[in-house]
Picture: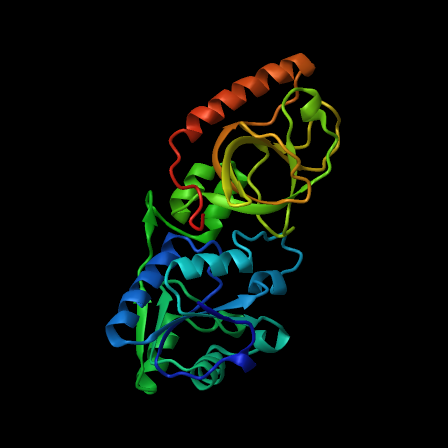
Length: 317
């Protein structure tokens, strides 16, 4: 897959089927758009092109809203490549771009500079200054210019529609299994192992203190989770505690500590990919160290039981 990170570097090609959006999460709804595009591109011999933005438009337009991302740009690129995308074009979302009407964006960016013969968007796609454009805008534009437009229906999940917002809410509430169903894969994040207080080692359960690599990444609700971890080309099972360590202090900083099963070694500084498989329990404050150790043993056993059934935790591993 070719990745183009600025409009000036795009090679104009009218023989494209194109879609445009943020595609945060690359969830089942997005995958349906990509499936239709991939099949159509193969049918007409066109280039399958996805156009997205960096930063996420809502982060630029609402910087104080506290919005978190389901996928970083690098994660999005990996997922798009796995779905057969030929070209991934990343436009810088800035003041200039945000002030364009939907008609201007379609004509001056997509048609004149990138090029396409067919365009596909989701049923609820809105774009342009003040979100003045929608699927009908695209249909009329395509008809006027002798192009083809496709509007892809929503993907339903338990009487509602799959959306990035629904996945984000599920994670905030600890529903990582629901998030996985909506994504079509386990939710994951990347992080670097940093120096901790080594309390886990003292308790007989050494842990890797993992600092997420992107502060904008949405993390699951505090609690204990069964996880799969990849690094150095190897896959490990483990249990993760995300929280504030209430048994030891009353601070509010959140830590993500992972105990890897059947692993010994120094991994400080290593980059880990962590797939969050299932929530085991909420975080809680214990009456003492012995009570905590007893619960960690139970949690580890529960995690091992869950993880025995896992076949492929990562789409790219």
